[in-house]
Amino acid sequence: MIDNNKDDPEWCYAQTILAAGKIDIPAEQDAECNHFLSDLKFAAAMFKEAKRVTAVIQEREWGLDDGAQLCSDLLNFLYQVDDVEIGRIARTSKMAFEPLLARTFSDLGKLEYVLRNTPNPPKVRKRKHEIDDFLITKLADTFERQIGRKPGVTTDWATSKRGGIFVYFVMEFVTRMLPEHVGQIDGCLTSAPLGHIEM
Image (cartoon, rainbow, N blue to C red; front, side):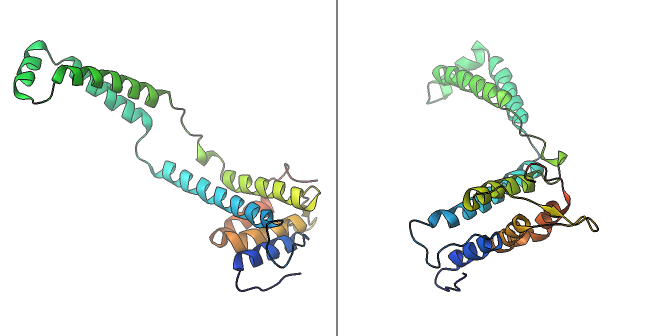
């Protein structure tokens, strides 16, 4: 039963989403049933963060290797500072130059090592629906835990359109929790391979 409680729209969303998956939850939210809403919010937050990170990586014009190269270039420059220049700097600087130089050598070397040895992120452009599949897999896990059976997807033999309780559950979730991504997830869910959740 869905209660249109205007004081708690998020709980109403949870009721509507789970009702699409044939899961009934109490009309009023309490500590015993908070997990229904928290699972949905967690899935939405993970999806949004994955999208944000992907966009940042795709738009970035530099990489960690560029930073490592800058460290290397600065180290090479500092190594060329000879005793004559060190003496001139020491006479005109209020700071002790040689200990500062030694620390800088050490820190730049460590920083270059860290930047060069940080693994590159996976190429996110290789699969168009990779993050969408990740969301659907997360929702499949939530669905299975909440309803107690594996999510299934049916396919219309004439149109190849996908349907079924799990599809309705996912689409209701996206409509309520990620409305700006409805068309994108709908295309992924109804046409992309979903072998990892089919019965």
